[in-house]
Image (cartoon, rainbow, N blue to C red; front, side):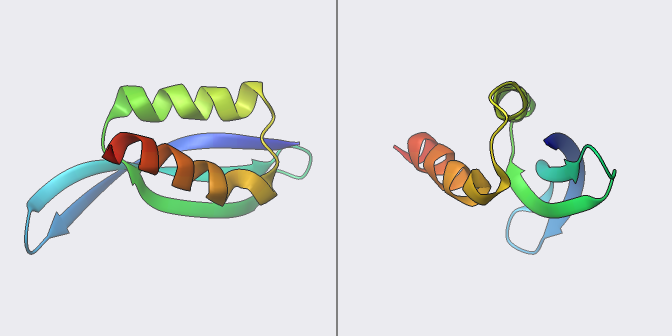
Length: 78
């Protein structure tokens, strides 16, 4: 089973300056090994927390993580 973790990140962008974002770390719960880390996914903590909780509750398969992120980002661009 995969456990998804929310990781807070600090960034400095030449165009927009300093900002905080949140990445997703996927860990194999049996071995404790990191499977994948995707940085700079969310800029809002509550949104990030909502989706990390959902991924864990629904036991999102790792092969669907990228598509799930794309769908979420698309929803918030509208």
